[in-house]
Amino acid sequence: MVMQDTFAITIIFIVAATFIGALVKGRSKDRCLKHFSGDSVTVINKDMKAIWGRLQVDNSSLELFYRDIYKDEKDSHIETSYIIYKNEFSNILVLVRFLDQLSEEERSKRENMLKKAYHPGLIRRVLRSTRNIFGTVKDSIADIANLFMGKIKTSVPSGKILAGQEKYVSQIQSQVVSGIGMSYEPVLERHIGKRVVASYMLDSKKHEISGILRDYTAEFIELMETEPKLFDDKSPRKADIIMPRGISVVRHLGE
Image (cartoon, rainbow, N blue to C red; front, side, top):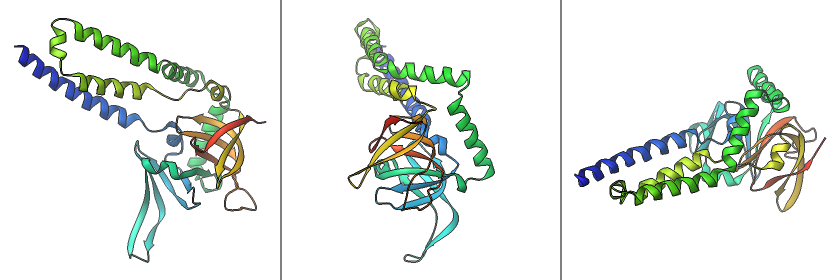
């Protein structure tokens, strides 16, 4: 009877781990990147190579769909998109949403984003505060989960049934915690909706750019109303940008 119970519990844990993993992965798209999803975006790599198109964001990649079909003359094939995988994100210098490349619909959506950044509504403030609370207590949640599972394992007869299920228990715990967790930094939180100055490194040189801090995650910083100086532009174009935190940091409060 115990053997049958153990087998059934194992099956349940496998199904639960698979279901929770799929659910977490499906919802774990970076929040900053999602704000640019569906818009015309230019991605510039550290080697200053630029790729542009309509952005689609997945949990493990970015895809830029070209406006026009591109024919590779060298290899004689047709291309309609460019895919950047998550392990290649470290090579990204900046994602740029140039205002003069947006359609009327995209401009309208972007203006609503900007208004909400300046004047967040009650629901938005509550949701953000809730995310911040979960981000702050993430480690505590993991400790409570470990304590709870440890208590169950030492009980009888559930302890015998759960024996050998550590692999699946640990997998479920890590998936739940990773789904809850988010980057929370009080200093950045205070400056959401304010103009800040971010610094970044390129070719071993420090550069700075001013913009309105729209949002941040563990991987990226999002600034609106910027004028990035790219490719030695004589007349910088207004744009919103997303920069990897690995090479950039919010350094000053601006005005």
